[in-house]
Image (tube, rainbow, N blue to C red; front, side):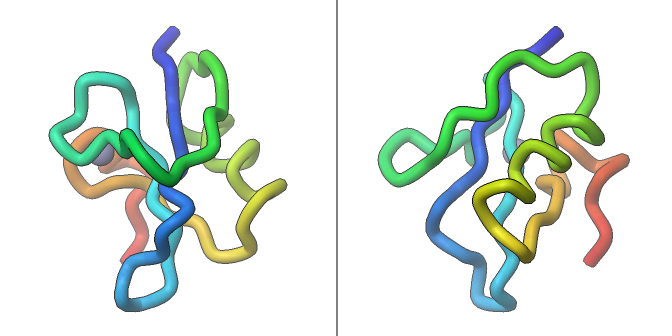
Length: 67
Ligand SMILES: [Zn+2]
């Protein structure tokens, strides 16, 4: 299990990125905590409750990264 957060600041393309604790881009200011997840897929599902456009971080959640 790992703790995930979604960045409430969108990327230039509109994506809200999901990050795992320990990532260099783990958001520390404007984020929503997603709780503990065993993988990024359920974290992304949780993040979709807050944002319609969600993507996994290329670095820490690459298997959920789509664009
Ligand atoms: Zn990340």
